[in-house]
Length: 95
Length: 225
Image 1 (cartoon, rainbow over the protein chains, first blue to last red):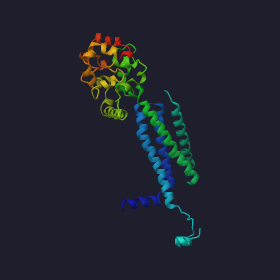
Image 2: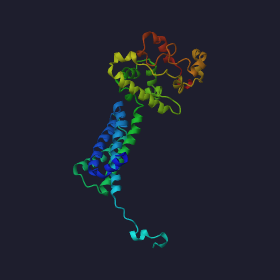
Image 3: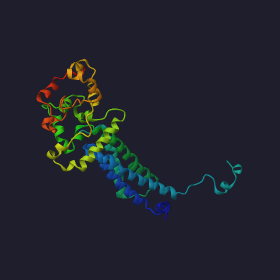
Image 4: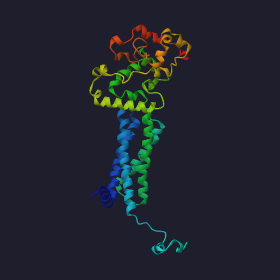
C-alpha cells in the first residue's frame, strides 16, 4: 500500500472523538510546559517551553486539523443548483 | 519571582484553554460545528497566544542574570558579579544601571546586525556543553575547565568606551595602543591591562596585581570615555 493510500485509509477509519481526546491531552501537556516558564525563568523551563512545549502544542493543533480534514472529506456539499440544472450548458441555465 | 502583565495574559489564555479541554475530556460532547469552534479556540487560538507571549517573555528572560545563573557552574561568576566588595571587571560593571541585572548578557552578547541570533546560537552551544559535560561536575571540578568559547572582543567594551574621549585618550597605555585596542590585537581584558572580568576563575599568575585591580576604580568618569 502506498503512503497516500495509507493516509486515505486512516482518514476514512479514524475516530474523530478519539483524535480530539489525544489533541486535548497533548494540548494540556503543552500548555503546562509553556506556562511553567512564565513563573520559573531558569534555563530548563524556558527551553522546555520554547521547544518541547511548543512542539507538543503544535502536534495537538495538527490533530485538530486532521479532524477538520476528516469532516471535510465526509461532508456532503449542497450544490447551489439542482443536478438537472448543472448538466445544462451555461447559456441555457436560469439565473 | 516577577510575573509581568503579559505573562498574566498568557496565563489567562492557558487557563481558559485548559478548562475547555478538560470539559471536553470529561463530558465528550458530539463534535458538531459549535463544539469544533470551541475546540479551535482551546487547541489553536489560545495556546498560540500563550506560546507567542511565552516566546517574548522567554527571550527576555534569557537576558537576565537569573537565567545565566540557573546553571550551577555559573554560581561563582554570579556571586562575584553581585559582590559589592569585589573589584573584578564583572562586579564593577554589574554595579552600574546600564548593566545591572543584565550584566552577563550586555557584556557577552554579540553586537551587529545578526548579533541577537548569533548570541542565541552561542547560548545553545553552552546548553550543549552543560548537558554533555559540565552538568556532571561540581563547582571545584568545573571551575578550571570553564573558559570563554572565543576571545572576548574589544568591540563589546567599545559599545560604551568609544576610545575617542579626551580622558580615555589621556591614559598613556590607551594612547600608545590605540590601534591595537580598536582592532582587537590587544585585549582590554587581558592580564597586563584591566585583567580578566572573572579573575577568581583564572590561575594566580594570570590575574592582575592589586595595584592593577585598584587602578580600575580610578577609571575616568563615563563622560570622558
